[in-house]
Length: 437
Ligand code: SAH
Ligand code: SF4
Ligand code: F3S
Image (tube, rainbow, N blue to C red; front, side, top):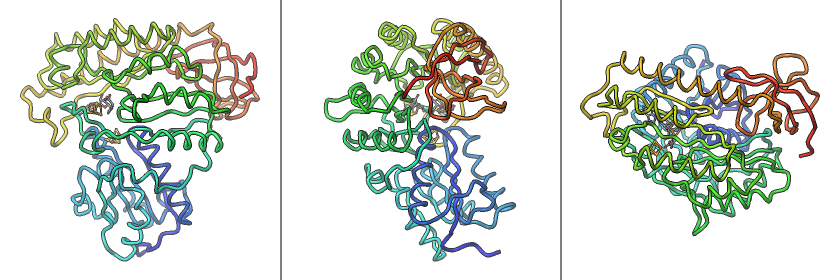
């Protein structure tokens, strides 16, 4: 079969963080607006967009194995590599993997032009980083599910020594107030009941003297919007205004994902985190004072270069002190071009495995305890999808726990639920009252 020119069908596959999920949705909307038809089956598509992640080595490797699989099982599609690997590797990836299009996370609004170029047999390459122009060039939001993402901020100026994001996503920029309020209203009109505000450092968002807390207070006024969340935040950007929003805004869910990475000050310094163990714990105290029932989440890296057993033990003790409701944890992965990749004292894989196992045991224990403590609570659940059993629906508690229940409520309904039992990863509930949204 010959490679399709002017593709008629497309498939977008996103890897990595929620910002990539958002970008993937926007690319799909863009291609649909060009008259292409979405297909769920990558192997049946004329154009496949791989929206990639570069954060750890494994994530990057996935791209190459996916391209191999498509070549074997697909219909020799036009392949576009988008996302952070495209940005990091640029034209290299076109040479190495013979793909047709390479488009960075700040340039994907140009995808239609790049598809046209590839249809002429040329390489479609765009890894420019123009400031914010992509959002204005994208079509309006149309139909979304009950939960939707809204990117408010992009990029990172923090330069943690292990991390590629400042290089793949560029400098911190904030989208403007009016554009965000308009997009949030469009999402609610399109069916969203819950909006999660996204950014690599979402709480660094600002427009003039207005911070993320002010934006949340504005979104609070949108009729039909029931819930607001935000992720991922950086400890140094937890403003007083945002903490006060947790106290005052009922629609702002009691959940905070605040990565700390490690519990030892020497390691935090070597990571260039610019917060200490103590300053992090003090921020959590302030947030808990504002919103006593807040559920906490974090990110952790084990085996950063030079990490001793005693320094790792400080991370375990921090976990004991905080009591996270859930968390993500990773083995340190050296990334090309980052300072930590060249540091002395790279940790042996078996030591990393052992530390990750102990860390995850502690996190799992706390997650199970948090879930067990929810039994007997009554809370609102936003129904997100059908479960496997007849009549079963799945949704989320305010604290981002998955809850299943038997109900005739529909996707998008808010239901008042009593939590009756808890497993490590999900809870069972009984419907008490249907809540009008
Ligand atoms: N901006 C966010 C998250 C960025 S990436 C923040 O600052 O917290 C998501 C997570 O991936 C990070 O929090 C970190 O825990 C992990 N991560 C980033 N680079 C990594 C690396 N080189 N090796 C292992 N984990 C990494
Ligand atoms: Fe990466 Fe650090 Fe920026 Fe987070 S704050 S994106 S970990 S450099
Ligand atoms: Fe991955 Fe890029 Fe997100 S590297 S985690 S997709 S910002």
